[in-house]
Length: 107
Image (cartoon, rainbow, N blue to C red; front, side, top):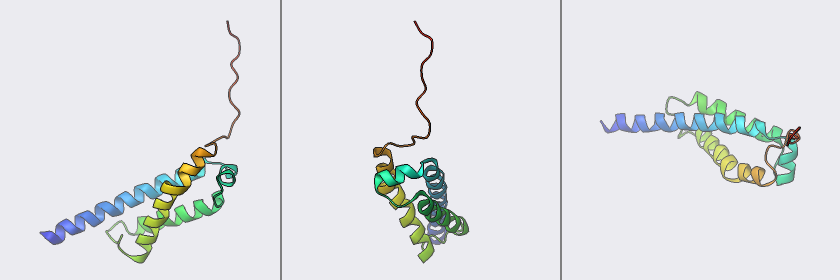
């Protein structure tokens, strides 16, 4: 019984890592490269590659292999993005890709 519970916990953690890695990858791609430079972080391409690798590894480890060396490295990359990089990107101006809309017409 305890083995089944342990396996269920590991599979659940593996699934959560996969979801977080996909979310981080999509979120990292939404910021322009200028935001990374303004935040003093590595380039968008590097973070996309790291999070893409973490997504691939977490997908391959969905059976509960999160405690492997690659699983732990994926956890570290995803946590580092959400704890350090993402807040700095938001502080440095966020997702400024288009000019603000002008209000036309009026009263």
